[in-house]
Image (cartoon, rainbow, N blue to C red):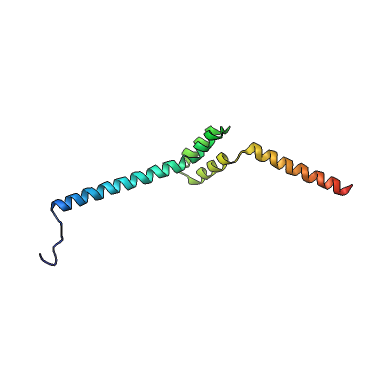
Length: 106
């Protein structure tokens, strides 16, 4: 064996290593794509779980989010935020602060 020769070239071990590397590469790409898909499905799953009123909007934003990722962030915010409850809470805070000001003035 010379110093310039490469071990395992054109042998059965070379073929086995190429096949193993190909399987590992395809498996890694498939796992990455599956993980990316499951990550992008989070807003839709959350909307269905909470019976959100804007499921169609969240689904559309999630699909658009595959291209423009900032839209996906918007879908996450809409899916996890119950806007009706948030508005009611803000209204309660506003009314309580107005009532406190009226009590202090009296």
